[in-house]
Length: 195
Image (cartoon, rainbow, N blue to C red; front, side, top):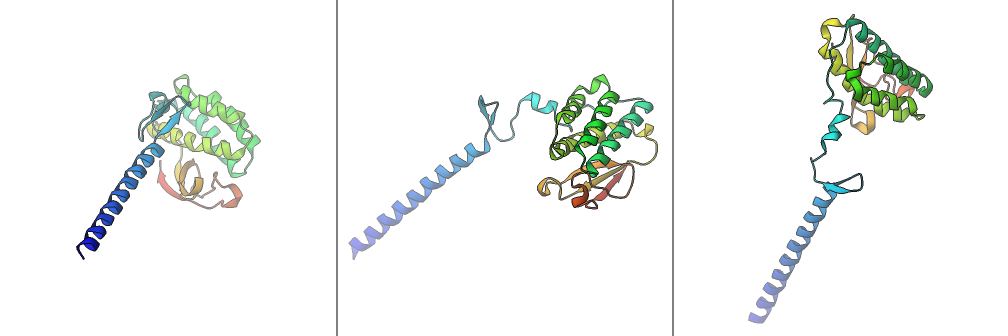
């Protein structure tokens, strides 16, 4: 009887040890999965990034003060770009991006780079992805220059954009016309804020 109890306890100890070793291996594997390669050179842990990663982060871009005329020109071109994406037209979007680049100030070099890149893209979905970043930057510019805005500007949001990640855009009309889905889900969205 003592032999059976000893054997059972010994087997249980081995099982517990094996499970603990497997958990540690899984934890180490999960840690490596959270790290990301950057330019194929070295690893970054979760939450780490180089300073240059912030350069294209629209939330970190300077919200430049612009003249009333510059703001009106920028918004006009931005709204044309939004409308082109509502119509799912890459050609119209590229033309509107070209107009917008001309209206951006020299201090907005990161934004100019983003919009210039949009002009080179043929795929409307790729342009839409950049439009999300552009919208965040334009929101910052409009907020910084709120006293110069003529008429209403609406911040509108679609929770289903980009595989349910959600994204917003600016509009001069309260009616929802979704640039991220075009005619697939034209009315998907809601007004989040009137600027």
